[in-house]
Image (cartoon, rainbow, N blue to C red; front, side, top):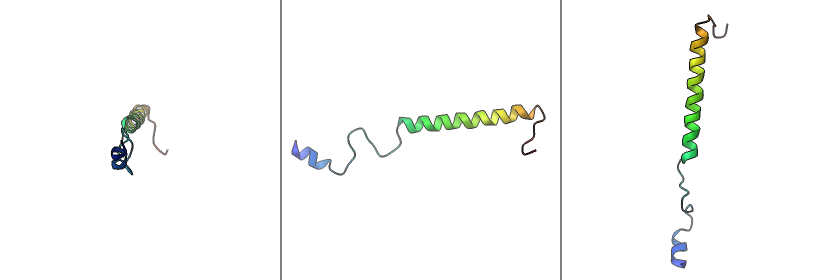
Length: 54
């Protein structure tokens, strides 16, 4: 057992990679959904003669 623990010193624990995980992926999915919703809202409001900054 001691040889195994000495090899993993300084590394992340098992299952913890330094890269993005599922939750970061879900964060980007929700960000894209919000962005797409805002774009569709602006397009819909444009049909009612709504102007940006006006």
